[in-house]
Image (tube, rainbow, N blue to C red):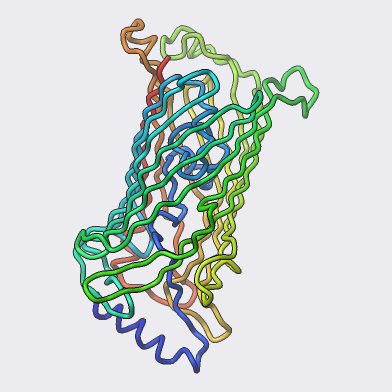
Length: 392
């Protein structure tokens, strides 16, 4: 299977001068930069990670840890992978601690793993068969409240790729900056619309503009592209009264607001110029996400979103390969906040938020032109699970 797929790519390169068809090589650490969310909540809302609080979004915006109200956060997330890397998996774990009311620190681990990958590893125009491919980022994060509602964050990301049977092929240090601002507003003047909040956020990943990463394995050496990523986001939330007698005496809903909390988030991402001179990925590599969320009685959440990504896929008038850099589609999610602190009569010092994403993957396959091998089309189910422990 691997030789067949490589053969398809070789043939495509051979005829590129005639058909103007080219294959998109993703940037270095493509697994970590594929917009696969580290948060099941954000993934269900169109991958809008930038404006959400919590350690689970810190890889995309380090300032997010400061806006969490919990003095201690512990989070773990799992998601299956990419549409044309069907066996790949994503793992995330992290924790954050409020040192003071204004200063928060955190530590996280984000991993992309692909056991028995379909594709071979290509370094310096040499190909290597591999039974295991992985990338990881270990991040030290800090956030500080500059003024009321405004959080600034900084993260130090130690990244490593093990591209051939788990052996190290490259590593880099990539810092990231982020801002997140939240304030109360009165956009709609109505007694029924309460707790209106406006959120704005931005982040700059790889703000030192280190555009190159070096890969090496045995006698093969290559210079890869390390993207500089700008993300901008905004959000609006409010609360509407909602009464339901069915839950009135249930301990699960004890002390909750008799209301539904609604939220809308937007996010834009773009690659900035930088990297090797022959790389022009920043001219096309953009994405946009929109997400909506409804929390019923502070306990049950329903989510939906839409995500679109335009990558430098090499699409021309004469057609394209069946692997592209483009994605577009809807995402869905749901979750619940389990009040373990109250249910245990204050013996368990934290509450648990559990979130899921189940549905069809947002695909990167060119379905309009090509019939794809079954190994890709049989693995289109998207599953993501997140567990958040929030100390009281």
